[in-house]
Every structure is written in C-alpha cells, then in structure tokens.
Length: 300
Ligand code: KPL
Image (tube, rainbow, N blue to C red; front, side, top):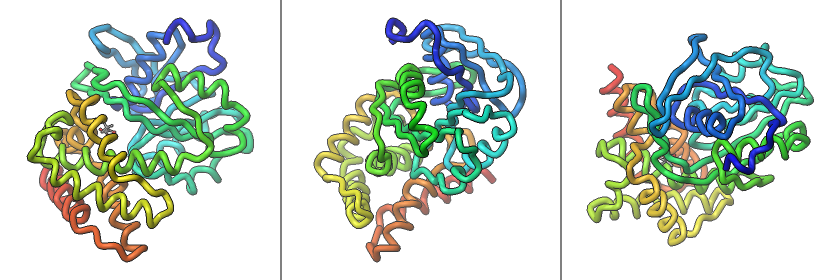
C-alpha cells in the first residue's frame, strides 16, 4: 500500500470523529506517510495505539479540502452542516455509514465545485479506549454523487484506496448499498442481541435465524429493483462473518457503550421498504423491535 502512494498526495485529508472506521482510515493514511488530521467536537489532538503502533493526530486546521465523514447515518446531516463554513469552495466530502445514503438533504447544501462521495466498506475495526484494531480485512466501493465529485475522481479514489482499500469505483452505489445492507441486517442485530463477536454467528444455532432474515431482505431488495441472489448473499454473509470473526459489530458496540444504534437505518429501513410493497417482514420486524427495546433499556 505505502509503496504505491504518491510522494505528494493531491488532497490533504481530514477525518471526522473518532469512531473505529474513521480511526482505521486515519491510521492507514498516517502509516502510508500522508498528512491527516481529525475534526472533532472537542478541539484537541488524539493519541491512539493502532495495531500496536502509537499514532498522534493533530486537531484540524481550516479550511478543509478533503474530508472523510464516517459518522452514523443519523448524524451525517448535522456533521455536514457544521463543516460547511470551513470547507474550501472545491472541497471533496466522502460519506461512509451503514444503511442507505440519504443525500437528498446534503447535496443542495454544497457549492457547485464541492464534491460529494459515498464509500461503503466491509472492513472490520474495533476501538477499545485509545486502542484501535483492524479486526477484519474488507473491501470498499466508492461512488461520486455529483458532477463536482466526478471531476476529482482520481485524487479521491487514490486516497480512499489508502484509507479503506482495496476500492472499487462505481457510478451507481445503490446495488452495493443493498448488498451491504443485507450483510448488516444479519450481523449487526444478531451480535447486538446475543452480545457476541461476529465470528460467533458461524455456529449452527444461528443459521436458521440468518436464513430467515436474509430471505426477507432478498424479497424486499427484489421488489425495490435491486435483486440479490439468496445463495450468493448467504455466502457473502458467511465470508464477512469469517473475515471479521474477531470483530464486535458496530451495533454490538453501540449497545455496550449505551449509544444510539443504526437499527432504524438497517432492519428498520428494510421493514419500511417492505411496507411500501406490501411484503410481510416478521423476522426483521421482530429483530428491529428487540434491538429498540435493548437500546432503550441500556440508554435509560
Ligand atoms: O459493517 C460492519 C459493522 O460492524 O457495522 C461489519 C462489516 C459487519 C463489520 O463488523
């Protein structure tokens, strides 16, 4: 990775927040010799230990030219609104979260030369206090969401290859988001409810539930015009369970740390879409309700 990185990156990157995926990306930039800084609610530098290496991240100096925004789906709009006054007129913003990209409120906020992107990733990362582990090799799909992004595609693709690569570039992110949604709809709520790591789900006692969830997700994906082949999808889910076996999913971590989960954007989204097509979703509905109950119990 580091050998292929250009001596002078075209853009200077800022990562928003200090979540596991954001710190994974920031660490990979740093280890590849790229300048990178963090944009946080509390303006202070951050020291972490990444895969046993101590790393120091400065707090962001403005203006910002290229920003990776790996914040939860429900926090994206307010994160972008907070960034707007400190962006350069041609800044590139890359969103990354679980669930569908709800960019209709974000695109109109940007100037004509400000690019918007989405990157979806299956990398596993785990943050425990100030320690970050890359717990699962994954891959990512990156898409430009407006014309200003398409003009900068080489620089952004090169950077995302360092941060969350290997990266595949696409013009249409939606099929990939449905694909990732299917993976998250299985792994995230089950690991949260059973309070286990991703690898635990390979055990025989979870297979029936995995099949039930996935069957429903495939039905609604087909109705929405993004068909997923059940057998292929099951294989992919098993693959992610294996490759991120040591990881605790983001939803399991949200419950443990008494944070709001992304259940609305994952199984909740599936249930809402199914209602539009009059498809019954008993298993996803039950899972959603169970996670919501758990979330209320742990956050009260
Ligand atoms: O996206 C993830 C998450 O935890 O949110 C996976 C890929 C399941 C890795 O844990």
